[in-house]
Image (cartoon, rainbow, N blue to C red; front, side, top):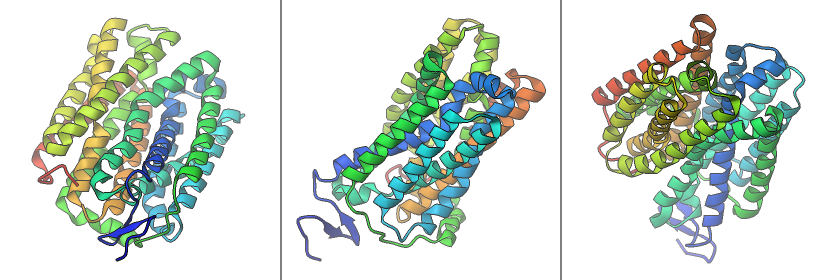
Length: 401
């Protein structure tokens, strides 16, 4: 196959020459950061949202459940449905939908409109996340694909640990509606960046829904998805309600919540890069450590979180461990299905967001039925179950996809 100035064809995959695709990779990383931040925004704003819309904390938490559930369904469906369209066009359209959802949430006069807004966010989030996973190989030379993929997924990891405290800070300074409006503005900026920095990305290989589902026949994939489901469900059952828990256990004021969540976030970023290096060598060993630390830390919050200092320490350890979940589980799945990256990523996104929805729902039921402390025990128990599955299930021989 002849090589041109613009692209080369390597192994049937179009590849950008060195240095030409990295701005596009940065734009895609910005997109993953924005969609996951938008998804998780209610976590640090549950109390003011519930007060403004006149619903309980458990009901307010359903704004996260709805988004996660829609994202879980849309990711494996949109990937094959939009497979024949240019990826740049698809990403820009989905970012536009997500932006509209955030702006609608900022304006919402009641809970019903908020739910509708969160549905739009879920569709945009699920589609962007699933499609972004397979773009690195089309933007940079083959020798840089690993680094580019890590950068794209770092947007997800950083959003998972910094998006919540950022939203909490904006909400404290200017109100929860301002936090959603800021997310809408960020989405618009990223949309422009995608349109300007990405090259044309015409459809290459058709991904069928049946092919995505057939990956579940691989024991390594099934084990990885089970670990994702347990860890993420347990984490969000507890973390969705971390604000009311901290207010009840530690007696912290609203202004201190943002600081504690920032401590969590900074530790989470460090955990992301530490776990990424470990997962490249052994995803099983890395996830064993993550699961054990999460299980013990979450369960200890009601016991040892009685002061701001101990609560901050526990949140730092929590963030350090959870910050490595997305990169480690993604490494597990890509190593399990190296020839089906986009299909594996669609499954990963579907299960990940389904687990977010289930965790928020289970946490809401526990919070409304047994009190917010119950969500900590529930979350810790699920992380312990993930530890058992990781230890006993079949894993890929290497973390390298």
